[in-house]
Image 1 (cartoon, rainbow, N blue to C red):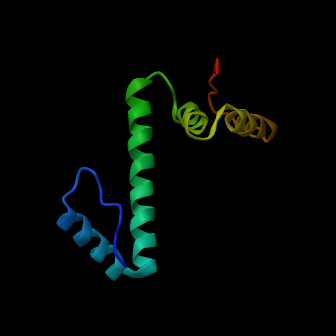
Image 2: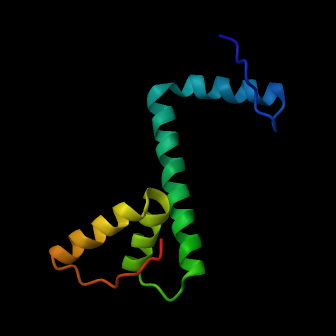
Length: 96
């Protein structure tokens, strides 16, 4: 199967080599690589929030992260659930 849409910032040879590597990894290997990448991106985005909001505790940072990545509605639901079960973390208020 020919790759018809090479990356714009990568040479065709490098693009083809990357595709071949992904093919050799098989489905399980690609899944593991994707999960590692996802965990890394979540950790980096949380670290960036922590750097921008040093005044927030971990609980508030998680709620802010949920809001930014999944929306204000879900963050409100998580906050309500935590309050309903007696969670004692610091909450944040959002204007969004």
